[in-house]
Amino acid sequence: MPKIETSRLKRIIKNVKAHLSVRQVSPNGKLVAYAQDTKGDEIYTVYVIDAESGKYVGQPLEGITYDIKWAGDDYLVYVTMNAILRPDKVWLHMLGSDQSNDIRLYHEKDDMFSLGLRSSESKQTAHNSGGEGAVGARVRQGWRMGEKQELGKSLDVTCD
Image (tube, rainbow, N blue to C red; front, side):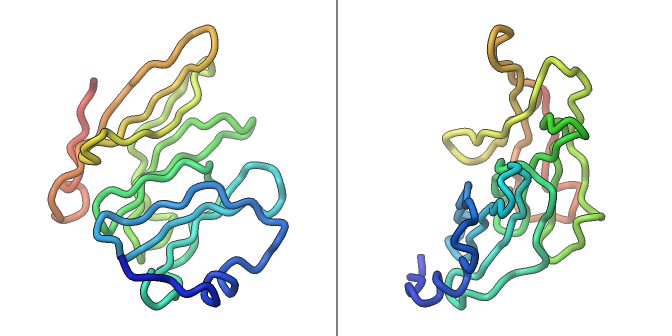
């Protein structure tokens, strides 16, 4: 993976009070996605930067949880929250596209469950899981990360 100079990091992280939650490197090692909360409300904005140049890639993703996973080198999977801040929807974002065009992969309608993402050890499958505490965790759905294909065919939705 290309090395990022310290001076570039200082330029990228401008708000010293900001909370950086997740830092995910793309499978090819060329991009870094990170989630930033500047208000303390745990509603994050995700930025993607080119690891070699330090430049931003596309527009930031706004209003999401800290939970992001790469789906190949060109897509991010992320979670958003409902009005009471319960993580309830999983989305697929193609880098360079507008967030309003993202594809909703899953909507958890049961208020007893909150969503979270995890990757399989092989990094070939992303799973959403929910229901913490007394109910226990449950895996509801998995997405197999396929070869680069046209949008809509790059992920096979499978139920676990």
